[in-house]
Length: 123
Image (tube, rainbow, N blue to C red; front, side, top):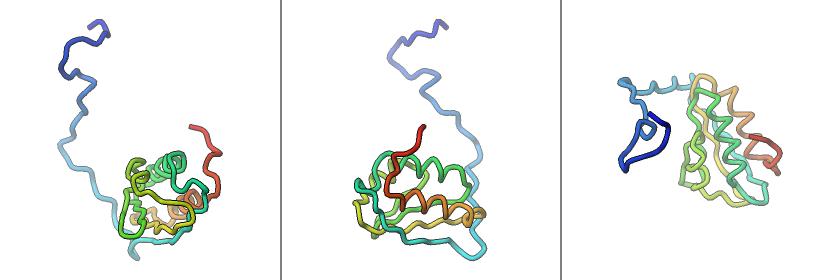
């Protein structure tokens, strides 16, 4: 193998390894999901940089994270889901966190959504 791309078909890097077992579901929180209503004060709404920071933080926890904008919902661990939610400035969203570490996850996630900036981090 010379490391050069060649041919028209998929190569070994184009396929993802498959696990035979499905991913385990997080255990539900003993008292049900933790919900918090948050007003988006960022002048650009829930835009790409804020969604990136939010999804990266959400993936650090094992609980499920859902963001609701009216009747539309998004997986909080998926940046594209968050961007497609189209949350405009000065609107309210519902943050729903469910799982064993939900009480630890809700405060940092809510702080990201409620922050007026969101531009002050590096990747």
